[in-house]
Image (cartoon, rainbow, N blue to C red; front, side):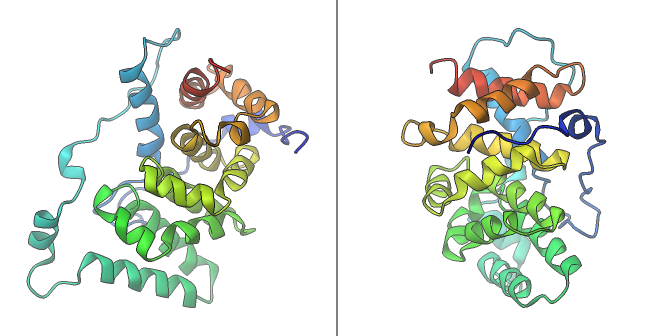
Length: 243
């Protein structure tokens, strides 16, 4: 890789974020959008390091324990005759694989991406190969599928086992590719995913000069987008300051 395309940098940052709301037809009402996990990367960074040397113009929401599911809560919500979570996710995967139109695939990919934020679902994601499905979405020409695919990766990769699956399936180059996307959310989720996935075993593959250069440009763009700047600075402070 010589360099990442960067001609649309200000166009990307200048976009209005188009995150479907929980009531949108793209999203299951009981779950969050992938932007929360990217925001959590900044929040995690702030808790584990000294304050960053810039004014945060955006406040990020904290995760409340009731945002996540456990076995008891899931049984209460499902009821005696409800569909178990793993069965429901399996149905979504099958629907995605059998879908014949792009809009249906987008809806299902977005739904799966929202389920990916909850640790209760992590084993199911690995069991049903949902992480591989997300990576396949990133390779599609449909920008919505790319967005929801990397959003699902961003939501799930804070878990080390999920991160290992993503890395072993060749996910790092696909995530890096998202940094040059014309879609703002896709770039945001890409940076968030790299924040969580990067570790000593794969740092050489991620912290390459052309990748760091792109992220530094986002970090320096606080006057254009505070969100991008905060997330990019969190990545640089955690993974690049020691390089």
